[in-house]
Structures are given as C-alpha cells and as structure tokens.
Image (tube, rainbow, N blue to C red; front, side):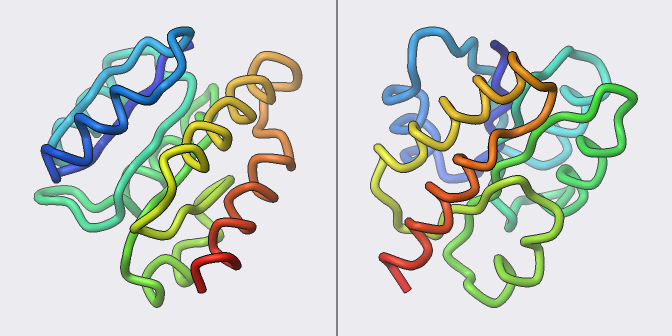
Length: 137
C-alpha cells in the first residue's frame, strides 16, 4: 500500500514515517508541488497531507487526488481549525494538530483496509478522525 505523505515540518514528517505500519510504502514530500508531481506520476493508494504547505496547498492536492480516474482516499491534517473545517468536504478523514500519533496510524490503517476492500475509505476512518477532533476540540 503506497502512502503519499505531504508535510512541510521535517520533524513531524519524520515522526509520522516512523510510526506508520510496515505495510505502508511511504513516499514523503516536503512541499505541495512535490506532492502534486507524485500524484501525477506515481500510483498512490492513500494521501496524508497537511493543508498549509509551501507551493501547492493541501486543498489542491486533495481535489486532485479525488479527481483521478482511480480516486485516492485523502486524510488531511492541520492545526488551523477554521481551515480544517472548511476543507472537511475534500477529505475522507481529518485530524487536528497536535494529534496523538496512534490516531493517525489508526485512520491510515482503516483507510488502507477500505481501499483494499471497497475502493473507498471505510467509514470507521472518519469515525476515528472525528473522535480525535472531538477529543481535542
């Protein structure tokens, strides 16, 4: 399962890579432009993106990923609650920063299982992410 991780904060990107399950092949990018290039040229099964990125925004990445002939499930993360709420319709799941790493891992595992079984994110991933939002809100 190939995960495209787009996060400009180097420390957070490294932590996310470290906690992801071994069945994810991670392609990490530090800018939205790099992420867009990867979406255009590589097969991606799940997109995990920050909203606020240098170059292309996370919203643009999410729209592009969902418009592909083989739509890619999208999990977005941000510490900007207003922007996250406004972007909720673009994602299959959302996670508020700062977040427990286990919540991201669980949402991605459910996304991967949903992709493998039905071609879409399982509703449980949304439940996990919304639980994170509720617990942090």
